Length: 369
Image (cartoon, rainbow, N blue to C red):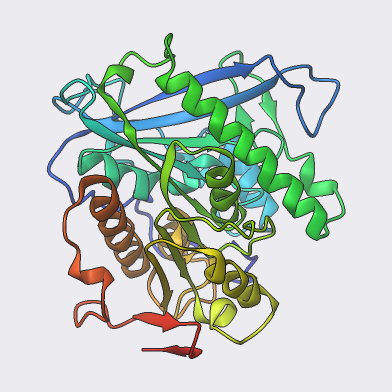
């Protein structure tokens, strides 16, 4: 979220996430995972990689306790990182979610596909709550990863709050590549913990290990390619508005892939960021699409676009946050329904009268329609 001087809260109402569109109530829980096989990539003195992961899943019934969005301290640090001082520091911690803490999971054994989500650099996993809740309401298990020391705040069960070590590092393409490969290692470890012989979640038996996919925003989206190259368990992937650094080898990547982004950055033939997608496009040998959302800004694809509108922060987008989120959730769900459930999705084949903002791009001809 960029800083916006002179803007203030537009109403006294509590921030809230849009309701999920699926038929299932949504449960959520958090997992603390510790990878003792490797030191932390950013703080080598920490001898094991520690991660916090949020899970969302279809629930048997709504629980009693609606899940918190983030802690007051996390809200404070996230707003501070954007230079936002026009709202109370704990504002985002009051956001109303649609999931219920530790509600009993619903589904048959090995019946639910699993989607892993990776957030943007400096951003917590909570920024992807609205897409996660929506997928869970549609019958998916969703695991969003906080990549420790890569965001403004990760809170651990013992009360520790780690902050953003990587924010202070000078960035270049090689560094972004290291970040993506590190995230790929995080993703593989989380998959091991959710699908191995001693899974860390009580509902793990519901996961169909043959139907696993990944999506991410910004560098989380770019990391999806790195994770798919590293881990064949990931059957399909989405890069949402993320410039890619890890190159696909000459042998190519034959699994389904979706690029979803904003025209200002990813219009074919226009600029270095779009050139990374064009380079990858040539190496994608399977089903693929390149979709751009007119009027979107970088945060439009996350909760932050919705919440910024509600609390009076101007992100520069020409599309309302709630509309951008509706589009994001609809196209993300369509992609996963097609490739993990084999359900036909005409929405992905051509422009839609219902979503005229979404342009289908052909990088070969450098046109979008």
